[in-house]
View (spheres, rainbow, N blue to C red):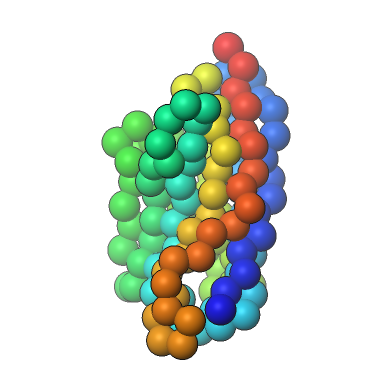
Length: 118
């Protein structure tokens, strides 16, 4: 299994920046890809960005050009650099990982709140 712990959320004014971190522990060598999702009040959880095998990266259209996903495999840590934040970016941000092999499946962190004021 894999355990994911997010950090870095907070309150920021529109136009500001935040960096989220997600540290993985457990069977990290079995992780195929990791990503960030978010869920705003009253809305479904949606993909923000993900990074997979060979460092293939996908971004949601709403964040492309403003957010950057990266990872440090030596530290088993995933990052999300968020720039030019907008009030509509306000949500709980979740780290996600897909594990292959023993314990195969999707794993989620506990979430971290990001609030952007107008």
